[in-house]
Image (cartoon, rainbow over all chains, first blue to last red; front, side, top):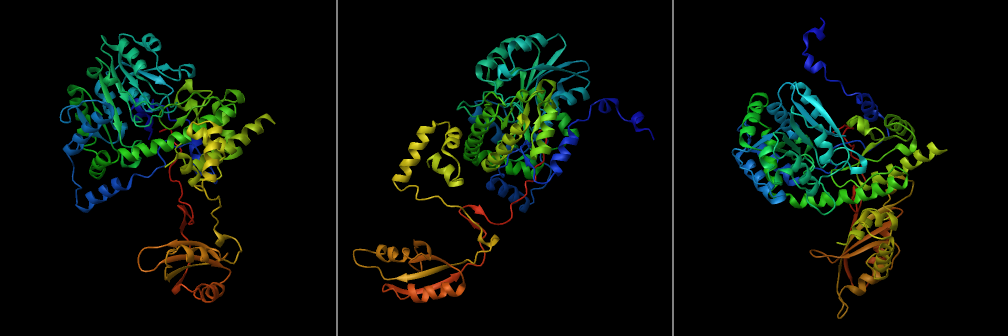
Length: 390
Length: 159
């Protein structure tokens, strides 16, 4: 059978990620020091795991309501108010999803019509573009630059807005660059968007992981933006709960209502065990977040300093758990650098161009590893840089 | 707890420069703080955690529970100091509960330790009784696991 004739051209038209092969090698190689993961090294705090176990012991294993457990939604509302000064009605303006990823999918599908343009700052996480394509939308990258600390500028945004623009993705704190958008930066973006019909999908999955003493600022809290913003967040990065697959979306009721339809037919509800566990996370784990952030910050300072010393210059990443150094001083392309480093010193980092063409000349290094692991990795990278010179 | 102490407690081989970078301090401030800790006896020493099972050193450890009679005016201090002087003794703790002092003793063989307890410890004037427990296996010490490391199951991804 010629399956290409049968399969939807929408999905076959999505390019497979070329980096898969590199990952397979990195994941199978012995004695690899990996700096390539995108999830916390911390274990889910024990009280959260215990709450999950308790829910199983009590046989709370039924479907929940489509939008998620009432108690959980109430706790999410409390949490957003407490941590980010955002007010959302847990009944009409919120839904619990299978990770932030599902919320992103639901949101793009609920908003984008055939031919609509979706603005995506790059480099960024890789899901927005293919999902946009699957809906028949057109992904329009906006290049962000190291000299702007990889922030989205009002100027760059303005240049890309057309009458077909429907949605702006705002992925900050950013994977892979570690960039954050501060209040003034968001004010400038809001200034461009107020008075348009462009909606914002603000992917704030790394919101808890910021390091300069300033709390993450959500664009939904900027004047005039709440009505045009869908905030996506989740439990994976803040509470080290990646495998639990739990996230949520909050936004204007008419939009959540439509997103919920997609969720209802495609997913039914997020896993009940995870939902029960998440209630405990929101009620009791603010302190766990603080101590994880403190630990990430120590590693971040160590890595930024070490990489800059080695001539792999990087701006100070203020959020997430990635450093995004330039490797241009080595004269290698991102792919070459990563391959040579993997084969030469058994250290796995990710080529920046995997996150969009504008990431060429950079690599992503995760500091979601113990300090001892990072110290060893830096030694190996140093040896590698020396070998390039010699 | 002071952040410098926390880092050194995790890894005493970090250099002062590394600690300074990690905590966003100047190297001079870290030097000064650590010197003060050493002077004030807050930091009492730096040693490696070694799993002697993995090298061919004859090494046996026992935990001895001692009941002792405290001395007027000196309490347990005097006997604790006396016991701490033996080079065979690795640690001495004053305990609450069923006995008074917990003493960790090391030697080359079980017999050597047994003789030490019989000849050196139980003969001390204030020692009323001893109970010797030999360590069979060390799983964790000072927060560091001696068991084979858990594999990092996370895979390299773009997530």
